[in-house]
Image (cartoon, rainbow, N blue to C red):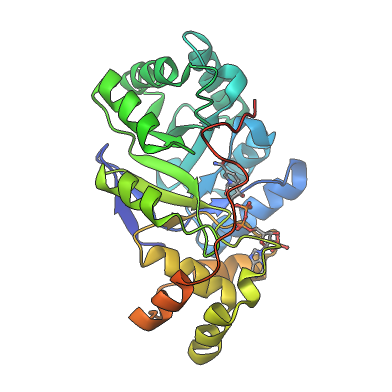
Length: 275
Ligand SMILES: NC(=O)c1ccc[n+]([C@@H]2O[C@H](COP(=O)([O-])OP(=O)(O)OC[C@H]3O[C@@H](n4cnc5c(N)ncnc54)[C@H](OP(=O)(O)O)[C@@H]3O)[C@@H](O)[C@H]2O)c1
């Protein structure tokens, strides 16, 4: 089930549907990633902070799929931000992954109070020139953070990975990011424990179209040109979560999901800190 791709400002293509690897670690993570690759996922989303880059790298090697057919994303953790430590952070990730480059490297959180995300991004631009990163991106960036890194380097982040789901739809933020030519990629698209998968705006089209509520939510995001990285440890759910291109939501379906009650954003990029 190959995913369509989205064109990035780096010239590379990114699968619109990827596999999120948090919170698995160790052999269960390797087995889940192997199952995902077997299902057809080609984008693997990991992070230094997840403690599973070694397990993801093992799956890449064990899969036998040529490296150039996979798209590996990892992320700069807060404690590695800054001049000099950004390079060390990336080199540590590459060593754990067993790779000599990553397809997409994201600043995991802007941490504006720390004040190092601009210098970190500038160092990432040098690491891209050195061939260690194919595409530069960020995660959890607000428009002012995007504008700051773009002004400092002349390179707009190709991707901004943000929390987005029916109860965290964030239309103004997403439009502002997309207007800068940056692809939005949704994390926690299925919003576990929020009740979204049981909401009638989601279950009604699922029943009509003969698909799962999770497929409806993921398709709703894709129809807004938002890439997705759903996670499942279950090969069965991995399969359905990637099977998103044989049906289409109507404008009425989309509008009904747009109307789902919004929940407050707990991890606000303006002040959320994790290292
Ligand atoms: N950049 C960031 O700050 C950030 C933050 C959080 C996450 N992420 C990335 O985004 C990825 C996805 O986010 P997430 O893992 O938080 O949430 P998610 O993908 O929205 O949801 C995963 C949860 O939903 C369940 N699930 C999966 N498919 C399902 C289905 N078809 N029906 C019902 N339940 C289903 C999974 O359980 P089972 O495993 O039992 O199927 C799991 O508990 C992460 O893995 C990570 O790579 C990034």
